[in-house]
Amino acid sequence: MTATPEFTLACSDAVAWLRSLDTSSVDLAITDPPYESLEKHRAIGTTTRLKHSKASSNDWFDIFPNARFAELFGEIWRVLKRNSHFYLFCDAETMFVAKPIAEAVGFKFWKPLVWDKKRIGMGYHYRARYEFVLFFEKGKRKLHDLGVPDVLEAPRIHGGYPTEKPVEVSEVLVQQSSQRGDTVADPFMGAGSVGVASVRHGRHFLGNDLCAEAVTTAKGRLVAEGAREGLPQPRERYGDPRAKQLLLAGAE
Ligand SMILES: C[S@@+](CC[C@H](N)C(=O)[O-])C[C@H]1O[C@@H](n2cnc3c(N)ncnc32)[C@H](O)[C@@H]1O
Image (cartoon, protein in one colour):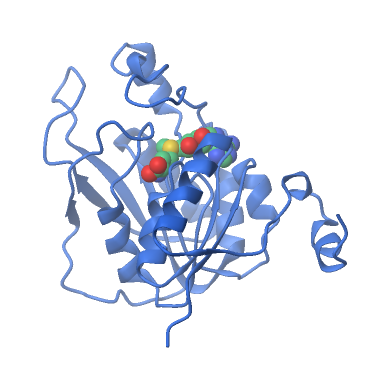
């Protein structure tokens, strides 16, 4: 019999949250930060409408500056087990910034995967139809199915959380780079598409987002998938070096 997948969610800064996780405790990291170049698209007007999205009740979120990539990737490297994969959703501009920083912390960069959204979106110079998912490796790990192509097709989500990603894309990554019973982490989970993909395939999920509304949405989706909530981790303890001892001591 297979155990029910468990999830634990938090509402904190991504790096502070990662610091609260044990070293070598995660089998796979998949994440989608609100990268700096999104701000540029907004400044020239193509995504201004998302500032107060009509498509959802959420305000547009703050960006995560490129200058913080080194600490972010360093923490992702630390929490990942040996011989594991890390996937980063981003655009072309962010890929050029992120790749050398991730390599400097030790990751091997394999290639960008393309998420083909099947239909054109916004933009003035060749309208946007794809996003990248950068494929990194810590140590050596074989993909589950060597026949999977590097273009992953899935229609964009309309009317969901801002920049919500289709679960189908993460399902491919989860199945390719982890096994049932493994733990998948996403420090910028938004509405929890990575979490849904993880629990749907029998993986446990650790998720975090700075936005409380995102955490509530993600929790609802995970419960609807039949996953069970694991041990809560109080927000005020993230980044606190004594957090683990306090948790172990059962103190509130
Ligand atoms: C691009 S969205 C993620 C969307 C997600 N992949 C989904 O499918 O719904 C980025 C998320 O990062 C969150 N965020 C922004 N700054 C953050 C930070 N410093 N730490 C953690 N989360 C942050 C935002 O609230 C937003 O939900």
